[in-house]
Length: 101
Image 1 (cartoon, one colour):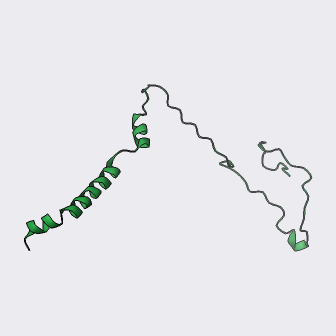
Image 2 (tube, rainbow, N blue to C red; image 1 turned 60 degrees about the vertical axis):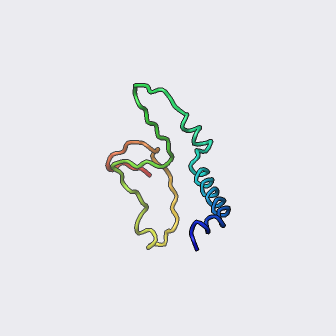
Image 3 (cartoon, rainbow, N blue to C red; image 1 turned 90 degrees about the vertical axis):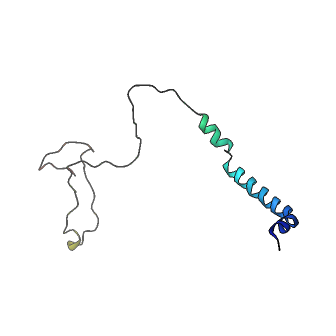
């Protein structure tokens, strides 16, 4: 069969398929309203100090700290609970040998 005759017979489905493909490409290529709005958003440039502020929650640990624990042999003498009678306020400076709790 001659390709020209085949094209003459089936030109409508080919035209519809071509239009659908072009419409699909145009749909994806056309910028959306949100991206167009973002492209318009501008601000004047200013020279000055650039401040970076970070706010977070958490716990700080000193560079030099000592892990304090109760008596290591308490369980061997069947003492399972202890009561803290006094404790140094948090952030206080202590020296070696000072009582902290």
